Image 1 (cartoon, one colour):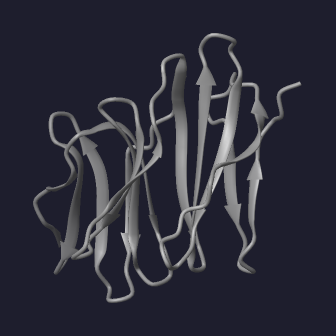
Image 2 (cartoon, rainbow, N blue to C red; image 1 turned 90 degrees about the horizontal axis):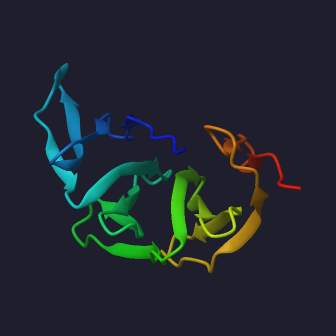
Length: 171
């Protein structure tokens, strides 16, 4: 079972409010709030499944973490003149992406995702970190989990810049 968040609303330093959502047939779309009215939807990522996460850093950089139509997990820089897409996880036979979340803490982007090995039923939580120079770390295994829950983990950032992950470890 996967949980899919329906929308993300972000407010930038210049006062611009953005609403990201998913529309079947269109992909991941966004609207901006201007003069109290939402604009028409514009496409942010066309070739995507409903499974996505949006995060904003302190410098207003926005990143879209999503699953493409082939089951790969990709990271898209949004709203920059030099847009880029980085592959976080390549889909492999017998491996199923289940849940993902991107979160900005100070000037770093943290990427968490779970995978389930359909052959043996084990689920793992992975973590990547991207610094302000857009360098992405290798994936680190956070732990193995019992995936009997709708939401396999919860992220909690503190004002001091710490990031906590809460999950039930598989035993």
